[in-house]
Amino acid sequence: MREYLSLGHMRPIEAEYSGNSMAYYLPHHPVIKEASTTTKLRVVFDGSAKTSTGYSRNDALCVGPVVKNDLLKQILRFRTYPIALVSDIAKMYRQVAVQPDDMPMQRIFWRFSQNEPIRIYELATVTYGLAPSSFLAVLQGLDETQIATKSTVHFSPNETIKTLGICWEPEADCLRFESNAASEVGPPTKRLILSSIARLYDPLGIIAPIVIRAKILMQELWQLSCEWDDPVPEPVQRKWKELHAELPEISSYRVKRYAFLPHSAIQLHTFADASEMAYGACSYVRCEDAEGNVQIRLLAPKSRVAPLKSLTVPRLELCAAVLASHLHARVKDAIDACVVKSYFWSDSAVTLHWLRSPPNVWQTYVAHRLAEIQHFTSGCRWSHISGKENPADIVSRGLSVADFLVNDLWKYGPAWLTYSERDWPVSVLPTVPENQLECKVVSAISTTLPVPLVHPWFACDRLLHAVRRKYSC
Image 1 (tube, rainbow, N blue to C red):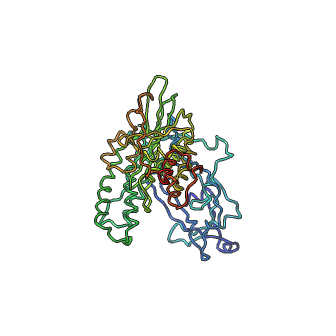
Image 2 (cartoon, helix red, strand yellow):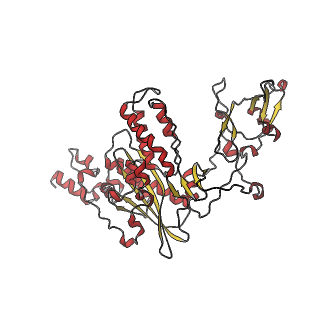
Image 3 (cartoon, one colour):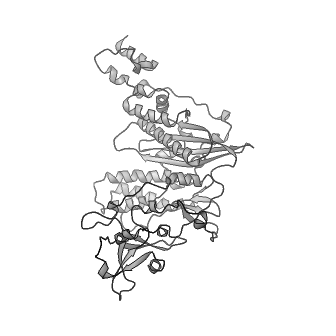
């Protein structure tokens, strides 16, 4: 706080002048972050504290548009370059002054000693804790010489720094995950378990097969009728204790930050799968250089817990395909590279049969999702793959940490991806019984009226055959 004064980032206000204008007094508290290489202690102001009117300062402020890129896109771009640079902007928010007329809306109470009287100060710069602060601190218009800095940090082996919310080992140029699960005292409660699960921060999805187990457990917790601080039932306790005991082992998991080969042809391979509990997708990059060297790396997975409303497995597989199409679009946009081809893989024969027909021949639920998939994957090929070779199967079912650490399918995808394309397995689509395909003819043949065969719904031979069989025509 003395630094705030010495730098001119706040100014004292005499008591006799404090009531001459409309003002807002910000509650504040310190946040200590020992892992930080620069600011160990940061003052945070609570702009969301309600006043006697029932509104807060943030309620009255315009937030402004988002000026930062999507976090996943930033992390993916962080993995696309052979050399990574990380820098820190000192006192970023506090480099931007606010208009003097607005300073009374940023007042605080403070004293440097218990022996001093409490004084009133006004904050003169953009402040942590207010809704528009991140927007107000853009660097647009500044000269490069004003924002450049020199690195004075040297790293030892296994030393990590936090960047974009993930752990990076600069010496080995690897990404890793640190488990922040707290030690437990007494029986686990709903509050304690949910708090521990919330600490599994994994924006890239590196440990998605572990996180999905926690997500499934979280969904189970929300369905329990127990109170927040009551011990959870024994079956849930057993699942949580098993997962909690495994979490510290995750810190030994490493993936290379740089996921590409220089001057190589790039392919994206996205896999989709679902189980009764969850569904997911994972995207891999395949790079092949002029010398024929091939490298496969996991770029980004995504997982979702199956909705509480019961869905058939084919419909969940379709949801996984939607997730895969969205993930591919985000990955392709983020890496900003020339992708030669994109491939999609699923072990669901039903989903692939759906994808081979126009959306309007299926029921509404299927039709809407098919239209979305076909929009995002236009010009790409969907192929069948066996379940044991589908890495998305891992994220839809989850793995123990011990199995996860040694699972090469998750890290590198199926082994045949390293072969020439002509040596990839031939995609043979299994036959699917008609009663599993949920076509619109189901609703049509349930009526007592004959259905005209010229209706566009029945452009598909399979549907024509079903109608003829129903009406003996």
